[in-house]
Amino acid sequence: MTRVITIASGKGGVGKTTITANLGVALSTYGERTVVLDADIAMANLELILGMEGKSVTLHEVLAGEASIEDAIYEGPSGVRIVPAGISLEGLRNVKLDRLEETLSRLIEDTDILLIDAPAGLEKDALAALAAADELILVTTPEVPSISDALKTKIIATKLGVNILGVVINREQHDKTFLTVDEIETILEVPVISVIPDDPEVSRSAAFGEPIVIKNPKSQVTNSIMKLAADLVGEQYHPIEPDKKGVITKLIDGLMGRR
Ligand SMILES: Nc1ncnc2c1ncn2[C@@H]1O[C@H](COP(=O)(O)OP(=O)(O)OP(=O)(O)O)[C@@H](O)[C@H]1O
Image 1: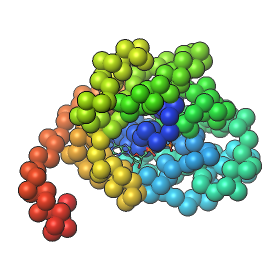
Image 2: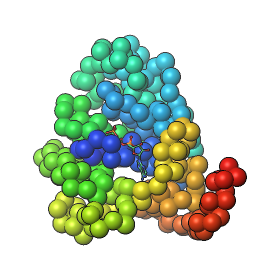
Image 3: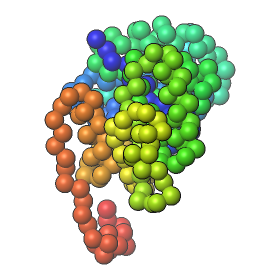
Image 4: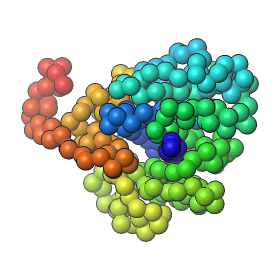
């Protein structure tokens, strides 16, 4: 039985695509046959984060009835299978969202977990990604506007009968102006299932087109995502000791161009 898990946020730019891409790779490393679908058909960037841009057949062509879903699946890091949404405006024009359901039903063959990267907001495309889900992971930063939008998404998902697994707090920083885990759980009334720190390495990895769980296996971001993946599939998680380089060592490494 395939688990269909949608990753949604409400507010844009909170790290949903980053988490979906890395979680997909992490789940694959646990041996789960995982497919990641970029359902953000208007503002796709999953393929950029994974360094897989420029594919000729994408979800755009599939939803336009011009290609079959099998031709839009590409192998990514650790064997995760990726369905990019396509970044051309031309492709977007012909998309018919009502083809999504049939597309998904074909995608779940030979798949343990289908992760869907939902668009931000609550427009038709975002609702389609929520409606397709069995389970939902909410992503928010620890800031009020992001939590407020996550709450709206949660309310809609609950109405659609989706099982809400919990909330991932992304870009956590030790800053008193941000809400705490307890406060976020109280507002959203869902458990916090992961806290991912703010780390400039995340954007660097994206710029290299390489997921951080591969590029920086010892980083705390990677540890958080690997643990989340392990928890989702009931695996034991063995944390990798995070890098504990001192400030001076990091400075010297930076000056020498080392990492
Ligand atoms: N933990 C993190 N630490 C630092 N930067 C991060 C972190 N997570 C994400 N980012 C950065 O935040 C930006 C937005 O991330 P991402 O594209 O994943 O968000 P999104 O919610 O999918 O956005 P959209 O709504 O546009 O789809 C990117 O530049 C990404 O590199």
